Length: 289
Image (tube, rainbow, N blue to C red; front, side, top):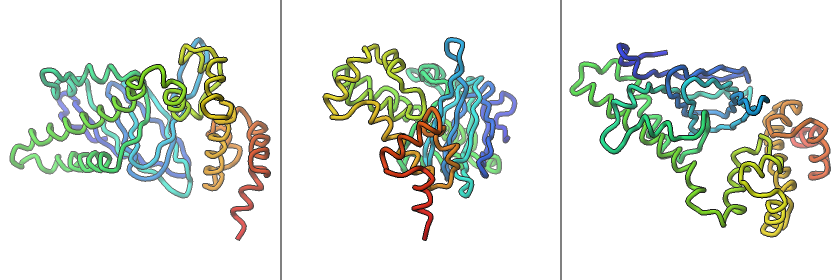
């Protein structure tokens, strides 16, 4: 790991390489950690304790996605395809640096505390990701450019621009649904929540607690506005994920876990009912010349 402003440990840079589906442990320590997926596909999870039980929130990431990890948090990163390694750019900001980069009316340290997640992943457009990647590369080179004109100012300007871009991405992703209003809950909020948490517990009990709406109202409104049941919609989305993972060569014994199915038998029955063949038969049908 490469240190900057070593007297105060302001920020750190490194590159994370994932291959052969081996897990890599990432700990944020006292920093706010941000990872940009440069190439490849991966997924990560952190262990969340809720009401005495353990739940694992799994996030799937592809090129240009951003990952946020708050201080004192640890995640497990893993490549999604053993034949295609992934590379992530990892930058960490200290709270002192966030304060130094702040200005009147824009407290970056407080802004980070407002983000309601301990860790999360969001997508960015190609232009935004390209800017972040270029800034990261230039920051890596800044060690060799210390004698250049206004080197310290240039370095801090890059750090300021990067954190502002990252914060905007998360703020837009998190608060977009709240601006739409309660009346659009079923079509907007529920779909967005299912998409973000498709690999997690999406039971009616869980949705009832999240939206403060009875399970009966959720089911009735969903069927009324979409013409299909909520269970069917969730299952179909998980099955589409399974088809993709199967064709990527991921073992079927791992596929059902990655897609949020409770067990292999559940996947087996749902897959055969939807596609008229078992997961193994589907794999063989697409692998046969």
